[in-house]
Length: 124
Image 1 (cartoon, rainbow, N blue to C red):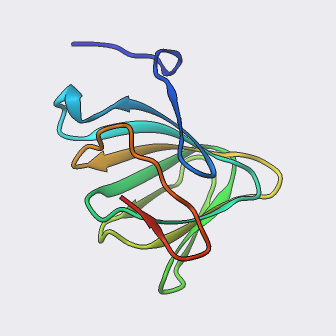
Image 2 (cartoon, rainbow, N blue to C red):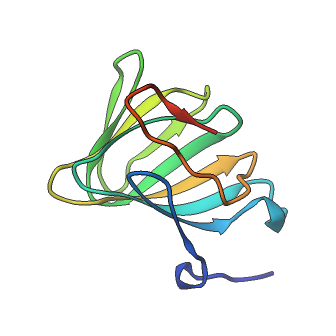
C-alpha cells in the first residue's frame, strides 16, 4: 500500500489547465488517476489515441461535446467516459473553473502535455 497527496505531486500544465497526476504508469496499478483543473472560459479540443478516459466532475461546471454533436452538461457528480478514443471539446463555464478526477487506461506516463492550437485536436 502507498498514499500520495495532491500537494506531493508536481502540477503539469496541459494547455488550458493543470493536472496533478496522482497515479501514473510507473506505479503499476494498470490505470492512471489525475486531478484535472480546466480554467474558466476555456475550450480544449482533445483526443486520446492510446488511452481510454473517464472523468468525474467534483467542482465547477461546463460541457463535453463529441464530434457528433452529443453534449454532456458537467456539474459535480456527473461522469463522462471517452470509450472510443473520442475527439471531444471540453469547455469550462465562463464563471468558474471545472475540476475533474480523470482515470486513464492504459495508464499515462504522467509527463504528457497537450499542444492546443486552432489546427485540430491535441492528442497523445
